[in-house]
Image (cartoon, rainbow, N blue to C red; front, side, top):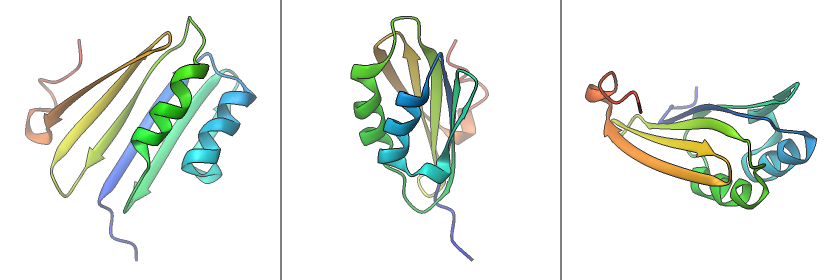
Length: 105
């Protein structure tokens, strides 16, 4: 049984097959799914290349893209939220005890 240290969940739209392939090349095909124009990321495990994924996607994001990807560090008890709006990605961090206050709005 694998020890879960990191959980990553998120989505981005609109996205196409080119963004799915790009994300899968960084994060692994089994963690990336394309449903219509919605790209989903879903991972639980020991390590995930979140910064590499954000860096790889950034130059290829369409101007009308929107989404967010949450990186939950269970060991440090921290939430790192990556907001995607157009080609910009903004990141914020909070303790998991404050996650309800940290809705990002």
